[in-house]
Image (tube, rainbow, N blue to C red; front, side):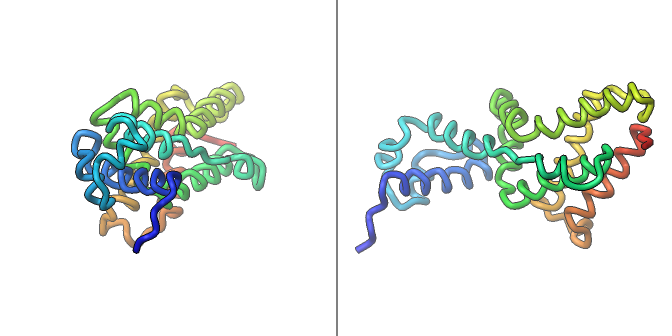
Length: 201
């Protein structure tokens, strides 16, 4: 006879399965019945833990989006020039997403379905990185170390480049990029970005 799961274990298993399905097909493409079938339980079991599909989705989003990377070591260990720190911070971020690419799938689905939820993905996971770029570019501009660029636009475009690299390696798995490591893509990406903003030490 199968061991009956404790409430915390059951909740965790529901979240794990729901995350896979929501990441694959979005909120509107998944039903409570399907989640229950995947788990081998009745929908009533799901409703014991989550009062509605909306509540379950909210819990999945919170769990997926609220993981924050720590950039303290990346910022403090090693050369302190803008390019070096940006490389280390970006590698921390991309490494974390590569370990859990469902984050990227959830973010993309949210962008198509729910802009408020997509904004939360930005606030939780991207903001530390883009804030660092924006703040640094303002300082570098005052010191005459970058060309004439809008810091906010530049940080947004950098975010898009990183997202595309993650998409190519972690989701699309495009044959054109299989010979390249994610770190190699990030290093090339940063070299292009620094050149584009006219960065000079």
